[in-house]
Image (cartoon, rainbow over all chains, first blue to last red; front, side, top):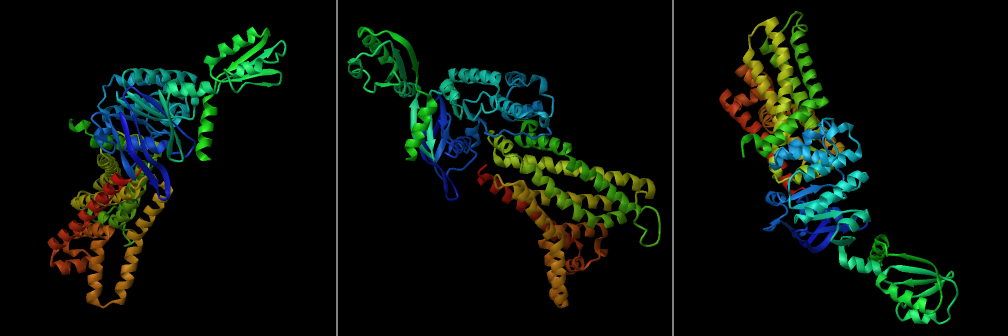
Length: 300
Length: 279
């Protein structure tokens, strides 16, 4: 469990996060979204105990402990945005060091190496690793302990499709086990795939908190069905407007905006008008479009 | 928790491993050994003689070199190690270990690595001296090694203080470190001697004595020379100190107190700084 209580952070005159109050419960995966510089990383660092809040506090775990205490950090695993390790060490040495520091059983090292697909390169110096390999090693370090809270700052940024698939599987498993996951990402696919809820930060302020259900509803509202008919039917538009008020004719197509649940009624009306459907294309609302709308709304 | 699994020991071992693999540490050990050998081998050249000096004379000749070389090495290696990449720092400090324990562990590892480099450098030269000039004055050589260790501890503490303020640019921290080195090892003495020449004997002596106690490099150098030569130590500052304390015991105590202060004060400030830093 993570609890932000009026958490605020300023760097000199610049306000990175302003009075953030929210919580992430056990078994919940929450995505922090927002444009660059919106305070996502600062929020995660606050939870990881790496920065001192200017106001408020962050509490971690059960019983809740202030994030700045080492005891609170026992409950977390943190993956930073830019993963780095001393280049003179091998991947295995890094994992052995963190394993010993966290008091994790030795058997975990080969397990996480396998997960991170670093089996064959664990005895090589990190200086010879690619950016993706360093990122995967960072994930392996974060996954070493069975920490109940995972804090991941852009965890999928440098993962290839196989790594991505393994990562999704891992997070889903941890969530199913009742662990808490708070992550940031610019990959909206991660959000759709993993998040039970998304928090949108803009200029340090929390501007939206949407559950998966609310998000699906908002996206459905942005769905569109386009129908090409074999002929024009004079009063059809008026009839459909009762179900889908935003319907229009555009470029010879009947454009019906609205959620998918309204579409069967629209199709019944079209069929009963006697017109035949030549072509039908339906598309759902896109998260990136919704995201841009929410950000633009807040900035206005 | 056993000693081997304590966070301080784990961090120290990790830092020792890194320092041992660092080219800087290896170069330092080689340069230290080469210079010690060169000093021992060429000691009599200026006085028209030839052959190797014994341990005591080599230690005397090396004392100034140690005070010149050890602080800059401890500062540079300390800054390079402690101001590591942001990502590495964030991962390390997000572990369930106090920041103080991580700092102490890393410093301990660096200290052991530099001490080992000095032992290898001085030890290598020591073996050659023993072979060529016998064991006379071996204790003086030991005192020189102790002085080098004290200087290492002091300047590693200063490096820790400079590198503990959060994510500063490494180049900036290095620049400040070099200014600190130049100020304490070179500039301070020049300024103090220049001022002393303008004063009468009494105030000049007091100034020199105070300068020895407030400057860590001077404190270590004077303590080392006093340890090697006892009351026959030469140098205006040493004489002023001996006169003031009326003997070597008082002088040794004052110098030990100054050295201890300079080991502990930067460390305490570094701990305070790292515990308040945004990482």
